[in-house]
Length: 71
Image (tube, rainbow, N blue to C red; front, side):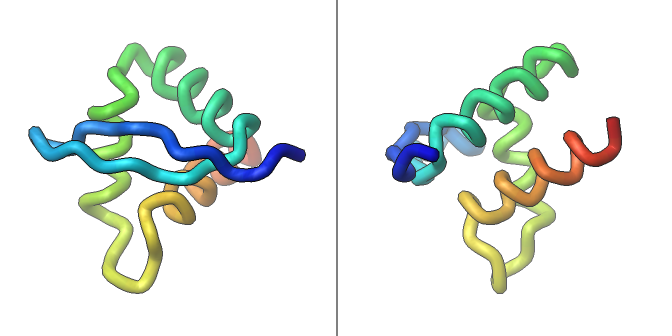
């Protein structure tokens, strides 16, 4: 597995970045595309519900894991 790399996102008009491994980033992009959604839109939704005790990168990883397990 690769080391995490920074990826840029825009959440509700604000630029941010998350550090994700390439495999998680690719799966996240595929999930968004499969749902017909922009990756920034999906990231903003995850950001809204993640709470304060979980970072955005971790929340995205957990989202990807849950989606893949639900298949």
